[in-house]
Image (cartoon, rainbow over all chains, first blue to last red; front, side):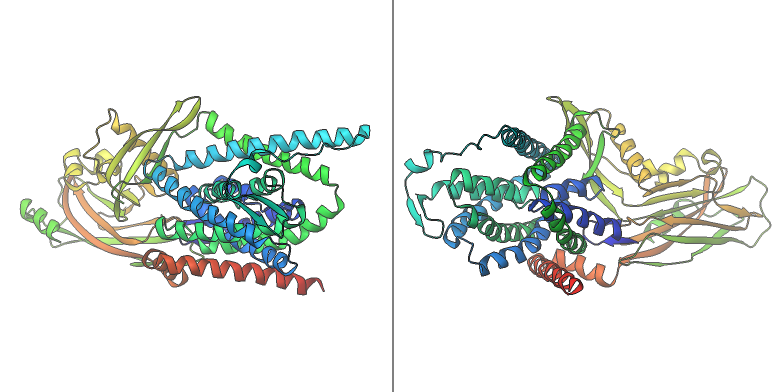
Length: 305
Length: 249
C-alpha cells in the first residue's frame, strides 16, 4: 500500500517503512543500540531525501529513547547531574550542527557531509569494535584475562572539577561538555542519538560506572534529539511525522523481538555481528562516493527559495 | 487570458476560423495519504462554421504543466578521489510537471518559430536565462532526463487520437510524486506548423485532509508542528510498546 509522505513529498510503500522499522528495531533490540546509524542510511537507499531522513530520524529517536529513559529514571540508574552537563553540551552541539547542516545545504553539499560523516564514523567504530571483539574471543580461547582500561590522565588535570555523586566521580566538567557537544553535532548532522560515541566515552574517558551509563546517555539523547528535531522543523521544514510514526511502530515491535533473540546469543558474537553490519553500511556508502554515479547530475531547490 | 488576447490580436484568425473546445475528466486532483497518481482523460472537438479547409491536415497539441519554480541543477565530478557536487546551474524557472502530447510527429505538428513563441516543447518550457557555465544546455538536458525518469516530464508524441479532423482525445498519467499547485492545460490547434487556435483550462492539484493539515502546519507554524511531531512520536512509541505488552500476556 503506497502512502504519500506530506513533507518528503514522495510516495512510499507503508509496509516497506514498517518493515524497515521492524528490521532496524530487531537489530537495536538485539544489540541494545539506538539504530539511528542504520536507519538513516537505509532511508537514503529507499529514496527519502537526505535532509528529511536526518530530521525525521532525530524525531523517531526521541520517541524510542523516551520509554528507555523513563525506565532508567524509575530504577534510579541515571546520573542526573552528569546528564544535565552532557545535555548542556549537547544543546550547543545541536545548534552548531544545524548551522553547519544549513550552510552546506545552501551550497548543495549537505548530502556529501552526511554521507562522509557516516563513512568516517561507521568505519571507525565498526572497525574498532570488530578488532576488539576478535581479540576478546581469541583471549577467551587462550584463557587470558581481558585487558583493563585505564582512565585517561588528561581528565584529571583539567580545571572546573565537580563531584558527580551518583557516578561517584570527581572530574572536570570540560570533558563531559565536550562529549555532549560532539554528540549534539552528530545528532543534528547524522540523525543519530550518538549513543555509540557517548557510551564508550562515558566509560573510558569519564570513568563512569557501567550501571548508570546507559540511563544517563538515554536521558541526554532524548532531549538533544528532541531539540535537534525542533531546530530542523523550524529552519528546514524537513520533519515528516507520518514517516516517523511508521518507522517507530515497526521499530518498537521489532525491538521487543530483537531483545529476545539477543538474549540467546553471546555478547562477543553480537558485537562482531553489529560491527559487520556497521562496516557493510559504511562500505555501501563509501562505494557510492567512490564509484562514478550512473547519473552525475542532481536537482535541488533553487537559490530563489 | 491577457496572453491569449495578445496572441489573437497579433495573429488575426484566418477566414475559415476553427476553434478548439476541450475539457478534462478532472479539473481538481486531491493528494490524499493514499494518493498513488491519477489518470486524466482529455478530450475535445474542433468547432467550425465552414467546411474543412484543404490547406493541409489539422493537428492537435496538448500540454499539461505544473507550477514553475527555480531549481539548481548540480553536476558531480571526481575531487580528492570521491564524487562530489562540483558545478551548479541555477535554472530560473522549471515546471514541476510537464507533459506534451501530439496527434502526429513533432515536425508535422508545429514549427520551431511557433514553438518558441508559445514555449511548447519541454526545453522551451524551462527557462535558464542567467546560466553562466559553459555547456549549460547539458544541465537543462539533465534536468529533463531526471524528471522524465521520475515521470514528471512526459512526452507523448502521436498519442492523441484525432478523428475526422474534428474529435480528439488522449489520457495522461499524473505520477504519485506530484507537487501541489495550479496546473494548466493548453490545447493548440495547428495547420502546417502554424497555431490556428488555442484554449486553456486549469487543473487544481491540492493536498487535502491530513496531508494538507500537516504540510501547512509545518510551513506556517513550524514550532508547533515540531512539538506536535515529538508528542505524536512519543505517544505512538509508547502506545506500540504498551500494545505489544498486552498482546504478549
